Length: 296
Image (cartoon, rainbow, N blue to C red; front, side):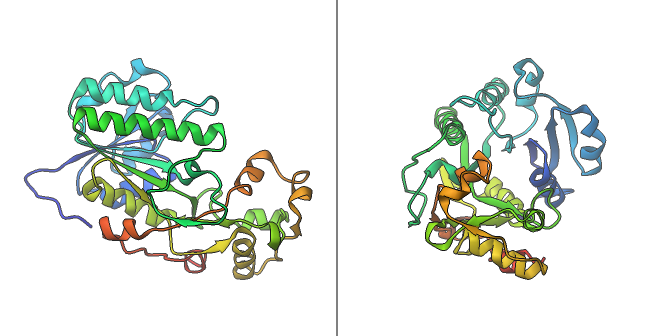
């Protein structure tokens, strides 16, 4: 962990303080001044208990963001875009507020590896062009573009973290055991896709490292070392949990059994090179494979 001077306690604003945001607060409590933006007033006590000053504001309501731009020199942006369209107005509203304040010097944004679309199972690094295959991914591409343009124009260091599937045993919905218990099928081997993962604790550690060591206008894959197809991942999880392995079905059959969201993840196959994460952020993964992380 980065050591901070007693003479200057940097201030960090966490925008969107869900599971990962709370893990970041836990890592940084007492090491810098922490502020957390929430749209839910009922969460104020929880955020205060986590060591942060709660700020009530909503990225869908620009008027509620009037004062946040003068409060922090670092911002961790964890709020996803809205659920429709190809643009991300939430990021636009946040950047407008930060621009008015003129204080922020560094922004770290949690994006998604979905911006690449289907890579046919290829292994690649962050230089691969984006190729979003659905509106959900297009919204993330729009957010990344806004942030990098803002960083370049305002002289603010922006680091974009492209994140795959997040898991953790203590994360709501973050462990495959519930899906396994329901008997949700996976694709047969010949139709299966490569999938990528990161443990929520390692993601929080990567966010902290990026807030102090991330490169300017830089993109990083925050992914572990696992190289598994999706069905093999669920087989491994089933074996570790002592549950039956999920049924295997052909892609055509899956269309009648799974939700459109589940099917969309099964339509994209890629393997992420994470060397930039380790080299530039000097991050040593606590859970380098899902086999270790699922047992945590």
